[in-house]
Image: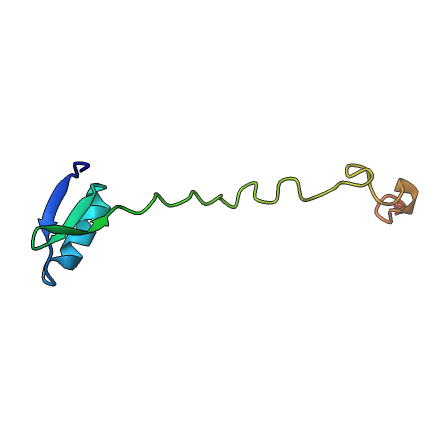
Length: 86
């Protein structure tokens, strides 16, 4: 039989404490009832890394056309066509 970190008899009083200990330490526990193995408690797999919000939209946008030049020509800008009166 494979060796486990801890082999113990389980009772209602110690159940939650034992489960918390498995999660915290990462050690497997073989649960026995009257000396007979009835369950193997193993820690959960590590949580998957969630991607951060920075860069989450990468590769989802397509640029069409020139994004640097003005949309309209300089001759259509009102601010450039204002004549100064002296």
